[in-house]
Structures are given as C-alpha cells and as structure tokens.
Length: 631
Image (cartoon, rainbow, N blue to C red; front, side, top):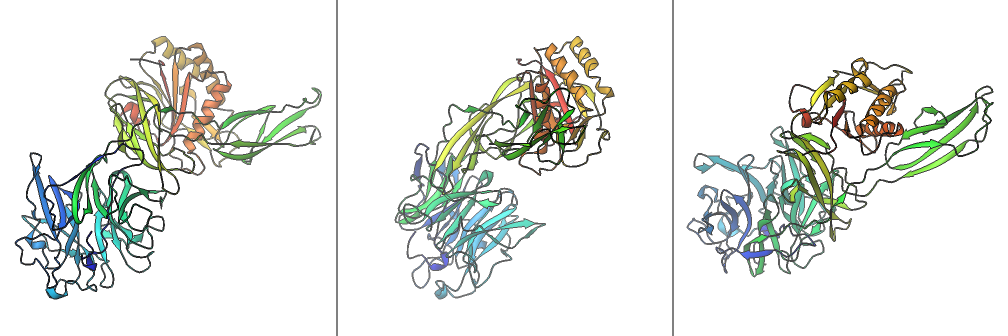
C-alpha cells in the first residue's frame, strides 16, 4: 500500500486462507492491474469482481488539487477465461470523494461500500482527515443503483469502513476507530434483527490490537479473515483468520507465507472450498490484485472413534458379613438417590471426579456393620474428533452430522472438513447429506486445530461407518407416548417415560419378528421409565426379555436410538445418558457388545430412517433390528 494514499482511506489490510502444513499454492497477478495505479479489495460480483481503484477514467472527477487521486468502485468481468477491461461499476455511485471499498451481498442484493460522509466539499479538501468514512448501502432498481443510504451508526467523529456481510445477510463486519476500542482500527460486527442493524460489537482483545485490524471477509462456515499490522507477522499488513467458538473469538491464525509477504497484503476473498480466491498486495510497489489457488489439507490414516465409558458396576471387595446378619448395601453416587444391593450399576453424567460412598447397614439395628467406604472415581473424556450421527439410516433420506462433540484438549477447532465418500471438502460443524445407495459407507471428519496462541495448525481426522438400508424399515410397534410414572414418584433430573418404536429392517424373517413381538410384548408395555437417568425396576423386564432374545439370535444387530428434546444441563446431552443406561443394562444381562449400538440424539433421528411420514415423537426410544452387514 502506498504511503501517499490519503489518511481518510485508512491503513488497508486483508485476509487470506493458507494454512500451516499445506503444500504451497500459486499466486498470480491479474493482467488488468497497472504499474502506476492502485487496484485493491476485490469481491465477487456476477462473473467477475468489484474492486477499488484510483485509476483514470472518463468520470468528471479524477484528481485532487494536491495530485492525490480519489478512489472509485470498478467492475471487471471474465469472458471465456479472459478478463475484460475494467469499467466503473456505476456513474451514479461516483460522489467526487472516495468511494469504496465495496462488498456485494447476494442474499439481499445489496452493495455495501465505504464513502466520505461529507461529499459536498470542494476538491481541494479531499485530503481533509476530518472528513471521515462511513458505510453506505444501495441496491439495483431497474438498470441503475438506488440512492445510497447511510448506515445508522455512521458518525462524523470517526470512521467506519471496509464492510463485509455474512452469506445470509444477517451480520455485517467492518473496521472502525470509534472510541472505546483497543487502538487504531478495530473490527466490529452488527447483527440485523427484524430488518434493523443492532449497535456495533467489538470483536475483543483476541482479535483487535493497539494497531490496526481491517478488511474483514466473512467466509463460509464461520471463518473471518482480516488484515492486521498489530499481530506478529512478516512485516507490513499480514493476513489472519479467526473463528467464533462458544461466543469467543480464538487467537488469530497467521496465514501462509505464499500469501503473506513483507509488504502489505490485504482484501482477500475465497470460494466456498477455500481453494481459490483473490487478494491485494503492494509487493510490487503499487496495490495490485492477485488470484490464488490452495490445495486442501491431506488427511490420511483417520482414527476410528473410541466410545467414552461412563457406566460401571460397583461391588465391595471386602469379606462379606456373616450370612446370618441381615444387611443392606447402600450406595451413594452423589445424586441424592441411594441404590441398594451387593452390586450397583451407575452411569455418571460425564467426565469429572466423583466420590462414591458405600454403607453396609444391619437392617435389624440400623447401625453400620463396618466403617463407611469411599471410592474416588476419575473419569476422563477421550480426546478425539467425534462424528455425531445415526449409525443406521435409509437411502434417500437426509441425515444430520455434526462434529460439535469433538474434544481436543486446549486446542480449538478452526475448520471442519467432511468426506462423505467423494473426498474431503470444507464444511461447517453441522452438515447434512443423503446416501443414495445402500451398504456400508465410511464418513470421515478432518479437523484443523489451533493452539491457544494461534501460532500453528495441526490436522487430525476420525472416521465411522454408516450402515444404509435399501428401504425404510417396517414399523412393528409405534407407541404414541409414554405413560405416567409408577413407583416412588421421583420427578427430579433424568425422570422420563419414553414411548417405544420397534422397527424391523431387511433380513429379518417372519418367525424372528413374531418371536420378538412375543418376547417383548411391547403393546402391553407402558413406555420405558427412567429415574435419575437409570432404568426403573418396573421397566427392566423389557430389557431382560430383549437381552434373552438377542442372545438367541446372535446373527442380528439392534440399533438403539434415544431421541430426547430434554435440555442439555450437564456435561453431556441427556439423550446420551439415557442411551448409555440402556447399553449398560443390556450388557449387564450378557448381550455381546458387538450386537448392540446405543446412542442419543435430539430431534431428527426418526426421519433419517422413515422420512416424513407424519410420525413425530418429541421423545422416543427407537429399536431397529437388522443384519450386522449387508450390501
């Protein structure tokens, strides 16, 4: 960037996308760039670009009295792979002062651009640094652009500039030196609510520094690129990106040296896959626009997910009391409910440190037979990527996937890459896909991880197998709702009564279906009850019968899907706690772990199997019988 550019334009900066650890990409200066004039801040528009330039044109205003050119908004298109000659985007947008940089939002067909707030001053005042920049908006009306409308938070006392808007049009990012920031230009955002822009919010100290951050670009899947001369870099303005995770912006990631240089590098835009885009740089003295290509990270030898284990059976290793003494073992797991029995099974709410207490009480006297025993249980969560989705779905139905449950220690996930069978591609934390053919499909999730300091990236990946049915399973039983509780009347956390859906997939014989119906007698079951996320004694006979049936047909598999809309209030979803309790109970009854798969989900798991057939259950336990493998 030239030092002679008026202070009104403000320190130009940018955004790119190369990741540490990738192979070098390619960078090419666009052929329409001049050696004497400045072209910068490209954005996508139709089949080409909009950009900002001080180039000569046939508009009434070309130079100031002091010899400094004003900036205007240009457009350039491509035809058969070649760039046309750039032209002014629209004469009606030429103010005689500085116009641009600009951003076109396809979601609302609006052009957002910077402009001097006072456009009535004489040309000799063009370099007046008190004439601040603001953000303006326009849209096409017929063959022309509408009169520019001022962003409601423009002020004469400070600058707002370099706007960009999220893909859905709901959030605007921009740079400003408004009071209350961290110094120089800071990055802000404003959300549109009910058609109105909310007050600007500073992105905070992880992103903003005492110097300048500007030229944001809201890329796909939540990544925000920007330029800074305040973060450590190669010199001048360097390119970075950050991602908002749980309401906090991570420390910026410095981009690859193929894009960054010792000069000013700024104004980057990328395609959906981050593989191609454009950016600006003054590495050849004037500001020029460059195209780039970047290869995707290479993921190899993806790990298979390992399930976390939070359910255990406890028993006392000491010598048991004499058989003649009437005693009761009382287990206290800290959830205000006492379990009794020589052995006690319990599913903890997730990772953490827990204290388990055991009392052995003489039921005749009420006194302890021995001193109370305490067990300290330390449970860690496996640090790995995690693909959360149904394991069994039907071809042709939309299936939801997410990587939100990935746990990678102190590292932050900056990007998700998904492979649904056609290779890795960038995506969001949550994705949908449709499998068109039946069989076993391997889904892989790649993660780009940043350390807390943002100094380096690491790449890891994980995989799981999705079993896809050729046709929708047959509904054998579909209870409309769980009935009221029986027993002790407990109504605290984890109190639920789930209706049951029993589905039979291809491969089950008629005799197997009939024997299952007879064994479970589900039409007479009043739902599956839980107390404190544990299956109640009244509901355990269902699982006793189910376990016996599964053991008699070892060639079959049961997928257990707990769909629960219960709010997440602990360290893991409530649906997962219910699912683990079912899995643990069946294994206690001797069912082979390879025979069952139990997982929890929010709404949507039933539609992945049955589609939209008018079956809607807010909460349900879905049991699907099928062959373990099929083609």
